[in-house]
Length: 145
Image 1 (tube, rainbow, N blue to C red):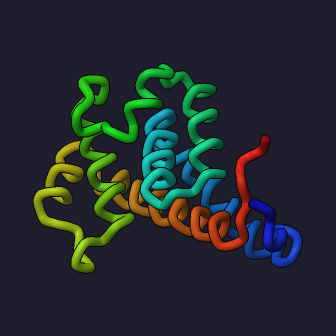
Image 2: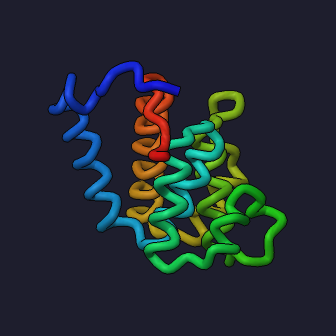
Image 3: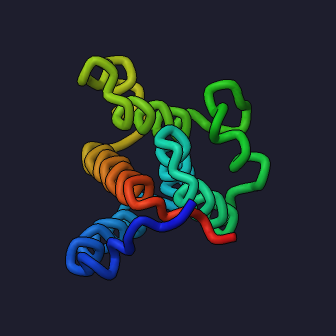
């Protein structure tokens, strides 16, 4: 897979704006929860670059290797606590938007584990990762060899 174009060089102001949101997210959502959510969103979207990056970042921020591998099957894994499960379910729903909605039960589960501010921040984190995934996939930014 070869890079179609280097969007960071072509539109540095736009890339800088996305990086700015990411920097905010790193302060707003605790790690490694943020890494796990970003990894799951990237898996759903099939973004090789971001799956590689967020797997490595999750490990660097203390997530056990087995847990990183279980993100793809989090709903069957005993390794995730209720808060992480709620975040991952919410991330999947917001990423896929089945029927253009977030189901009430998924939202309620997330709202039980996150304050209003945390839920807004989590939603922004999911949205920005979806944006990054779409940039990397569109322009074929693959993981390093």
